[in-house]
Length: 194
Image 1 (spheres, rainbow, N blue to C red):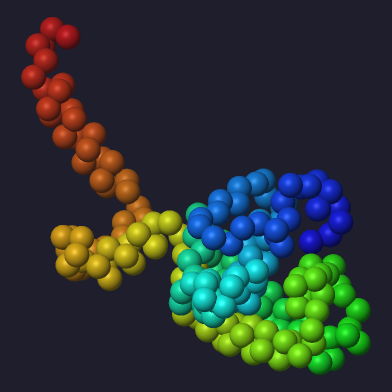
Image 2 (cartoon, helix red, strand yellow):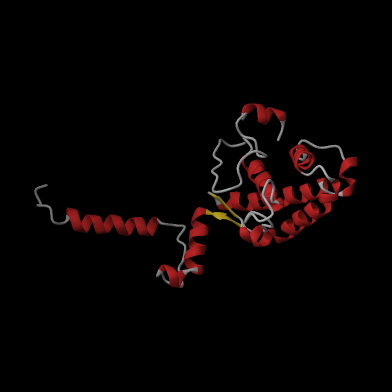
């Protein structure tokens, strides 16, 4: 995140946002939402700021949920998180001190320097980050409707729903049917004079 982005969003510090509970990141296009989500993901994988007995320790992609609105955003978000995990792993490498931070990695360098100042901890951090990057194909990064559909399918018996559900993306037929039903129910019975 550039200084310009930080100055425009003085209240949004991806290194200070709480990792417990749910978080909504809502902003206009191009303001750094995807960047912020990817940094939060890196922090979760590292167990940043958590005690050793915290349930937020040793999280991998199958244990994390990221929800967005569109299918295109889902793919981009998954790719950007994987890229950020790989970049973070490089920042935690032995050669990292010889690398000059880029605008993309400056925040990760800050995370490392402020929260993991002992280079002896870096190999473990790097290992966690690389493992998470490898597991990104298993990550729960999906649209809201995709996640709901997945949960209904995985828990069909518990939810009392059908085992074979299909997700309707084109609802035009359904809307036509509802309009016809409404017409038959409320308009047909009206007197012809109307």
